[in-house]
Amino acid sequence: MKHKKFRMGTLGFLLVITCGCAPRARPSRPPSPPPVRPGPPAPERERQVVRLYFATDDFERLALEERLLKPSELTPQRVVELLIAGPGEAQHEALLPPTTKVRQVTVREGVATVDLSADFLKDFRGGDPYFYLAVYSLVNTLTELSGIEEVQFLIDGQTVEAFGGIPLNEPLRRDESLLE
Image (cartoon, rainbow, N blue to C red; front, side, top):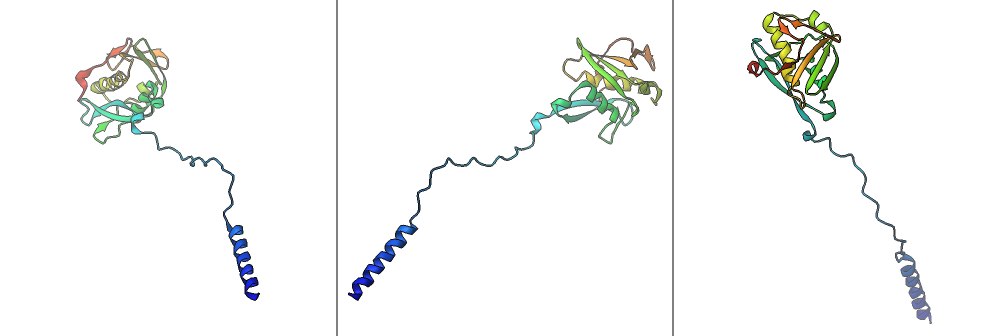
């Protein structure tokens, strides 16, 4: 009888353990979405090339420098500001006085009107060949932009007749003969 009680107790014990340890059915939940991670930085193709012209180190020609800008930064005013800031390459020279301020640049019917502060004239250093290179640094750079074929200059909102013998009272077209 002892054995019978022992077997019954063991069987009961195993039954309790087995039933009590069985995995319980959990209510089904939809799987969690994967964690949100920030995307990669904007690919390089989202930047656009802007072509700027600075003087060669001998001040005889205009040399090309390319820069990458976000599309939102690629405005005629920003491009003129980059010219004023100067070249990024050691063999190129700045032509516009760093004190020059861009008052406004507007584009209408293919003509970019560039309104510069009087510092452009007042602080300009150089003689005749530099005048021409400085003016065409701006003209050739701006005519690289879509929709601009000519450039008109204003100084403090006023038309200027000439700058170093170059007539500025009418729009100027690109001069490719100056390019390196």
